[in-house]
Length: 68
Image 1 (spheres, helix red, strand yellow):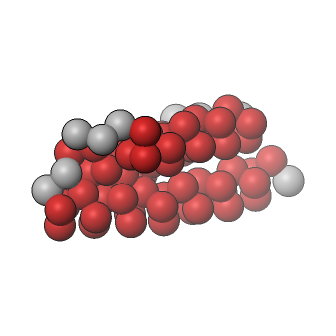
Image 2 (cartoon, helix red, strand yellow):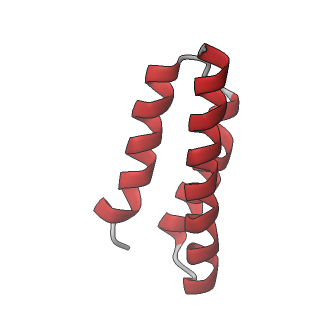
């Protein structure tokens, strides 16, 4: 069950990251672009489901909190 959860959460955060990446690229906004890239990459390095979700939620919230 652990592997399945990691896969599903990783795919969800990857899809959200893809949206942020495309938005940041089209709007030429650095924060969503970098958050999108981070959301692509971080599931490869985290093997605990709870930490994966916590870090993912923080990365999703960053473009809404930081407005540059």
